[in-house]
Length: 102
Image 1: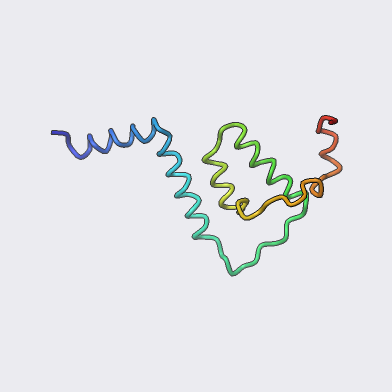
Image 2: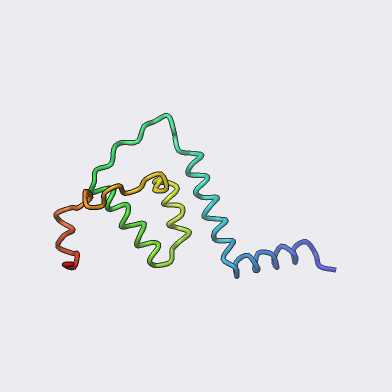
């Protein structure tokens, strides 16, 4: 019969192989950030440039398959509550130099 330590080790290995352990850890981190976030203190309004930078960082994380880090960032910045109503309104003059012409 297996010991408790052996069962824990097998369970941990299985969760790691499936990618579930990293997802669980990321979710816990996000919940800790949410619990520590002072809801009574209003957040400053973000400029269009900052919104664009936040979105670029999120896209970078997702593109490079850092999905658990992206999920923590999303929870902290509350991207899920924000939807770009008009992406054209977020244009920044300095970023236009880096974008390919359409």
